[in-house]
Image 1 (tube, protein in one colour):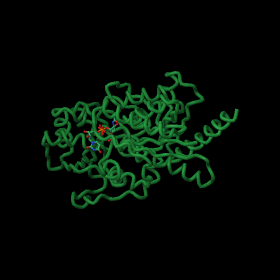
Image 2: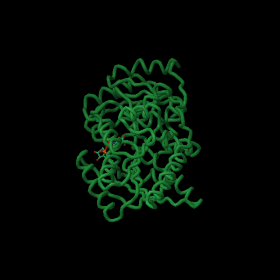
Image 3: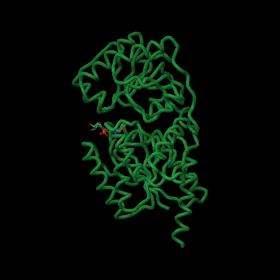
Image 4: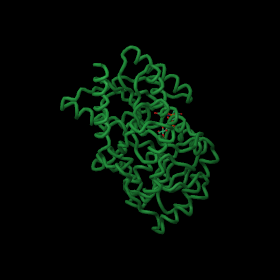
Length: 371
Ligand code: UD1
């Protein structure tokens, strides 16, 4: 069986790395399962892409669709056209997509229209906020997925509500956490640590890139002003996503405790998170990593597709009103933040479970062909 593994944007890379490793390990044991790694090129900067491949030991993609930047529709259209061409020239037996980025949705549509089976890793999660491009990507992808690999009981329930057959849902855990646990011993202290005079548990890490928070000048300015004022005695380290960088140049914000830096590699970023007092973010994946590392996390969003990071983990939704930051921060300074636990099956063995299911599907396919 030939599986296309699709990766397009930064949050995909840590999700595919352990799946590829698990397939390669099984191949050494004679497994007749092959993969073709396809990078759509949605993220293309060295710091958003290549550095992750290097640090996580991901092999060079077999094919790069090189789609680059564009509007949502431009990116979706380009990815579909270019992936369809790949499939028409050399079809695969399955298209495996991860997460919820534009590449996830675009490749599943292209494959499904050519009657190629679609497997979705991180299926079933929902924020309920249809204004997020990611929510549209999740709903569309899951509406045409054949095999659903899920991270939580909440995701399983969402799929049940959607009418998905139980036998196609595989509750396997979280591949992002496979990578986190595997790489934890290799985390790298960033080169600027001494220069910024950082001390463990005495700084805040911040990431912002959601259109709701960063595309309007006033919202971005108010958020950053509030955060820098609330934590005036602590350094705030802010690795800036390219989308946010464009707006920040217009806003022109500066504060003595605010340190704007370029996007970090995986190993440096997670070192920073692991030793932080707290994290402020509007990301989804980071709330999973802070949950597993037990770091207080304040999410500047009104909804989350990962409710277990709040009910079990260390995450709390503050909404997007800057006024919510001060009381939350005070709770952290007073040592009143919840400690949290680890969600079921976020144990580092998810990719092995996924490959076991893929083996079973491969065997069934061979039996069907023989009939
Ligand atoms: C995408 C994902 C989001 C994910 C985020 C993490 C979608 C709909 N969104 O959002 O779920 O959390 O990645 O990074 O797929 N850019 C560069 N260099 C790059 C990549 C992007 O300069 O390597 C610029 C683009 O030109 C664009 C902006 O950053 O102006 C946004 O990039 P885009 O891929 O459209 O979406 P993200 O906001 O990164």
